[in-house]
Image (cartoon, rainbow, N blue to C red; front, side, top):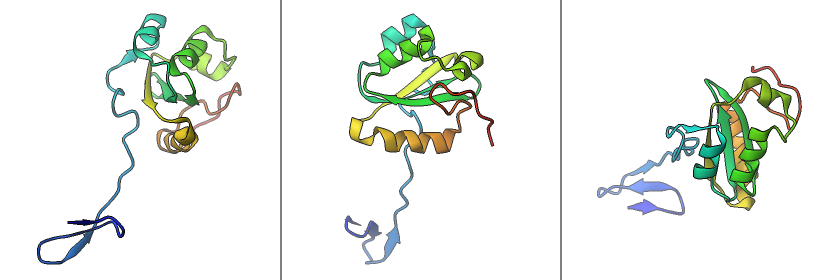
Length: 130
């Protein structure tokens, strides 16, 4: 039986064990669907919803958050974001997570720390990976 207040589990003998909470896998629901970073794929697969998104090729290029994932991805695709780093690294795919606006910033920060994208700024020149 799980004790919700303490986060521990108790077996039938009354012994307890600590439960390990692991963070969610980045973009778990669609990371491996290989959504192509092409206009048709964005229009078909990206939702018009709040969330976080990632652009990638062989490496993660950019992680962002937005009120409308589809619109923001199309801005990146059309080059309207004026981010030379993203244009230079030419993403081939994208992934996303639907996240309520109140939680987006926190989730974006988690993804930035975990995935270490090449481009880290909003319109800034690319920054070296550690």
